Amino acid sequence: MQAIARFEGVVADVLNKLVSLGYFQTRSEAIRASVLAFGKEYGLLRVPRETGEAAAVKAMKLHREIMSGKRKTVPLKQALIRAGIE
Image 1 (cartoon, one colour):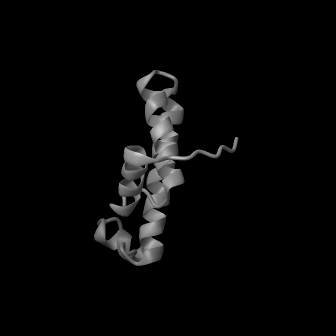
Image 2 (tube, helix red, strand yellow; image 1 turned 90 degrees about the horizontal axis):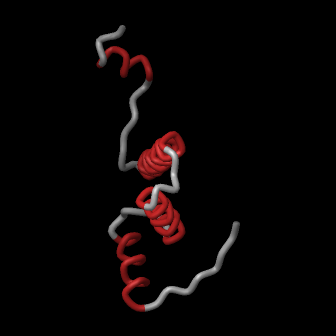
């Protein structure tokens, strides 16, 4: 589904602030998250889907942080050593 919407005033300000503060990368992501939050609030989402959506959002955020250099990664062997597995 695709939709076009116009936001003005306080709604537009809040939407822009969510992006500028880094909560979301785009206004579209902020709108999608808002729709999911309302769906949860009104009991329209099932728990497994909700969990999957949250995991997907977190994975996308981590990927963006890694790609931008904000989050560092280590090789698997080093991670296993740090965890005391190897």
